[in-house]
Structure formats: C-alpha cells, structure tokens
Length: 349
Image 1 (cartoon, helix red, strand yellow):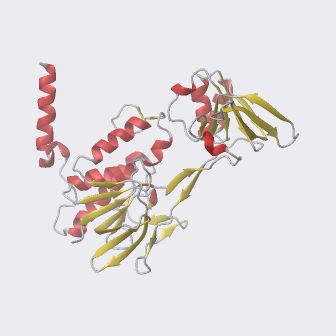
Image 2 (cartoon, rainbow, N blue to C red; image 1 turned 90 degrees about the vertical axis):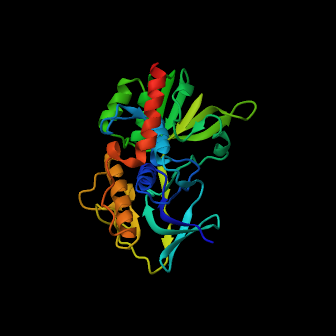
C-alpha cells in the first residue's frame, strides 16, 4: 500500500525547513526532500558569517542558525530525505506523484516548492588535477576561519564573497592576496576599500594558471599566476587557495504537461502572497516564489512558509482555520513546554 503524505516540501533551505515545522504544527503528515546531503540551503555557503536581520534574535552565525532551523524543523517528526533529487512530478487522480533521480516514487496530496535558487554548485577551478586538492587546501567556501590563522592565502575572484572573505581573513592570516582576471573588481566599492585598508593585496588582470603540489602530492605548495595584459607570470609558495568564481544553479525539476505554473524570468514561480500558484495543490515559499510585495529576506521567507502551509491546510480541509493558534497558547506545545520548564526548574535547584 502506498504511503501518502499530506504535503511534500521540496527543498531543505530556510523556507523548506520552516515549512516542515509549521506543517507539523498544523497537524499535517509531512515529508521534506533535499537534493544535497546537508540541510540549510544557501546559508551553508557562509557558515561563519553573522546574520543580524532576524527579528528579536541576536547576531548568529550561519552554521548555528542552520542547526537551530533543523532542530525546529524536526519538532513534529517529519520524514526527511537528503541526497534525493526530485526530477519529475505528475498527477495521478487526486495525488501528486514525485519521481526521484534515484528511481524512487513518492505520493503526496499537496506540494510546497521551496527550492530557492536551485541546486547550487560552486564554479570549479578549471586547472588539471585541481580536484585532488579539494580535500586539503583548495577551498570553494570558508567553513572555518580557524584553519586559516597565520597562513599565506590566495583568493581567486573579484565579487562580494571573495572580498568579504579577504577582509575577514586578513585579521588572522599572515597574508591575503586577491587575484581577479578582469580589470575591475565586481564587489561593492565599500568592500573593496575595506579590503585595501585591511592590507589585502589585490591583483587585477591576473589568474591562477598552475597548481604545484608538495613532495607527497597531497596539497598545493606553490601557485603560478599570470597577468593577462603583460603576460608576466610568477610562482609563489602558498598555504591555502580559495576559489570564489560564483555558483551554478541547476533546477531541472519538470512537470507533466497538465501541470502548468507561470514563471517570472523563466525561473521563479509566479504566485500569491498566500503561497498559492496557478496549479491547485502546488504551493511555493522562499526565493523561488515571486509575487507583488515580495520581501527577499529571511523574515520574508518565514512568512512565505507559514502562508504556504496555511494554504495547504485549507486546501485539504476547507473548514480549517486560516492560521494556527499562536505558540504561546497552542496545545501542540503543551507537553513540550512542560518538559522545558521542568528542566529549567531542576537546573536552578
């Protein structure tokens, strides 16, 4: 007998995770499917960056924020699948049938699309043998600042992420050099000035052309750089190489012909602030959803998620309340609140 979910959420970033929490709060049988092996979406790209614009919340690192989102999402025990990509969705009677790249099939009464910018993969350094250093000292994101302390670092890229990392690392590194293939950096002027003031060396018209390994071939020991205008090149010792060339988004989710959802810019799903799309039973939340008055911030993402779940609830149960009772008085938290208060009481004795 097929296992049918009330709602299946596609995407495990902030929009998807909060949708999973809120759908549990509304008593819906919930599945969340994430294509990557980790939950958190784009926030995982900047784990040590501080997030300041969450209402009533002190500054929090991206890594800690994701941990708390995941904990919250699991409050009502949804089914969570990671490393699973949904390729195709079709309609079978009153159910949606989701086909995955792994060959599995899932059934759901409704769907919330929370795929954000799609599957995000970094643009790799296109040098022979570069991939073998990805486990040592070639990086496409900065997971921890600590490992860069006292190191000679070269960053390839001229965008905001590259210059942000340069500024952050300049305070702890021995040296930071940014190389960029074009004439002018694409980062904000204020960020560039901050990098220059922090002592970051910036070389435009310059690219990394060769990686030279250490004696046991396990890590990069030297890099060769070349100026595209003068054709001058030089080789220098290096401890860490960071590549910030942007990201490729891949969003190949397809629908059977009878399922039609209008798109903006040939990508974003057009809908309403309530999360509804033109296709009954399919809703959307977060970056992937476009509507008039959209707020492209985390606070907007949470509202998107709650609205989408509330729309799912009333779609399945037309007589249901449009929104859930506030958490401070919600019976769903009664036992959980008691457990927390008892723990606090015992810890204070």
